[in-house]
Length: 264
Image (cartoon, rainbow, N blue to C red; front, side, top):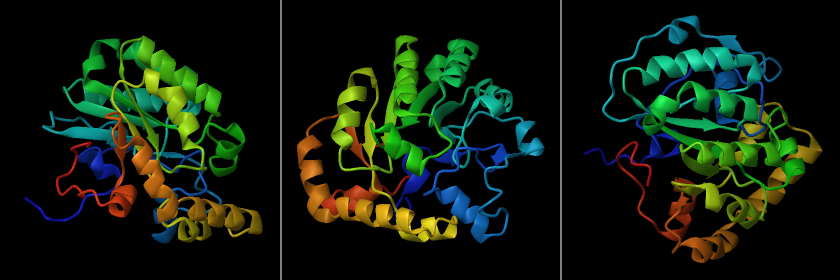
């Protein structure tokens, strides 16, 4: 067994999959954007201009013993829905377990649920909702849906009998309890809480060096200081539906995973 600590996407799934370079949602804190810029695959300005990876889109998958997180470096929205449906179909027809992670658009979730209703036992949705305030979401995630639409997606998937979960990573304000209160009843699996990692560095890499972005980032970092994270943990530590990302586990003394994909 590897003793390397597991973090990021691999806390949730042991494999990731993608079929698009770039992302229209263009979140300011995006890790994938910062990596694409760092290795000169994209620039801050053209990251939101998506490019379909045809070779990946047409790839045939075998049955994997673990699970796939899809997507991990782009998102699903109405303009690329057809490509995402094709890619998901290629994964699902081989019997793979898929964690679908998205800042969801209702038309997309309705289409996915309808198209893959017979594969519902292979799908776990994980909708990213870092704040219950749509203005906060709009600032950090300018191309993504507002809170109300994301909540509608959660309720729709839940009502259709799909397994559902929430990612509050990163938490985007100090009122994450408002998200938890709204989503918990429609969550079959778990609500994950996590800090904004390497926020200032990623903002600058992604081209957001303006005073407003830096000020809001510094405010968010202050909110997520240890002295505020510990009471948050104490508030929810006995709730079996609340789970903690590596960034919080390190603060409160929980063991870090050493095996990919355990989703615990």
